[in-house]
Image 1: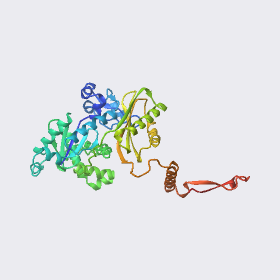
Image 2: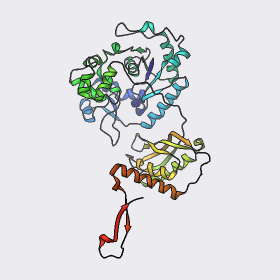
Image 3: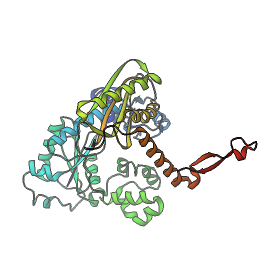
Length: 411
């Protein structure tokens, strides 16, 4: 049994400064992120009542609701708040998979053994004979533990798969969990539930234009019809309508190592690059790194104009070379949409430590030649054997330019 915990409108509430501030705004939505497609993010209940939904184009949203308040997104604040919430869930024993901020899924077996009493025999009374099933008694105990850990208003759903649990959380109320036990319980759910997944979200509008409004109608169409009209994504949507989903992949809990730098003046361009170099040196000198290499890092900034910006970067290979890190991260820093008042660099995933017995300082010339050989090999694989050539001087004193040098394969 999978349990899904959802904090409704989590990203919007964090960006607005809290749920009380969000209620005072009336119709509101997250503004599109700078440099990306002009689609609104999460919307408030007042905006949803007039037909605005997440993923709608900005122009259409403003035409439906001219008084719509656009709130700058705060990905850094959302990541910090959600990381703290996930750590509280992991502290009570849940192996959490987080599909997106504000939603966490985990297998109920572990918490059920800790807090729910019996392990065998509880599921028999809840198999649905009609579309709705009563939650088992152990689910109330698990929900109570989760809510105490989060200390936030949450909606909880349960089901045999991730999508069933997400559907249960979508129709649950703050004090009552919902159980969706399979395809029969999903048949009456609206097709807009497919917007919960990024790959099936584009199918909602075409299905509604075809007059298909429920997941039961999607399941009735059959795999062949969905595959013929929508391809692989159609097969995915048909499987979700039947309650089928991929297994959970819980994250591996890790430690947080980060460095931040407050900028006294709005920084961009060369000033931001100098601040980035200082951050890289501080992060590599942090004692919590304990000699380990870095596999993935997150570069974030607080913008002067409001909101935040964040980019995640996975290195091609684990490294701890400040020069290579500066070269790669400077390209991402160039995407900064506005001057920043704060920069932060945090480790998302560590690599292996320095191998014992290996030389601490390698020959720079040998390393450079090895990288050059690898670059030549990849260029030839992509563009053919003539992708990398070298110039050989044959007759430098010749009056004929074509006889002075020739091209030869680079070795």
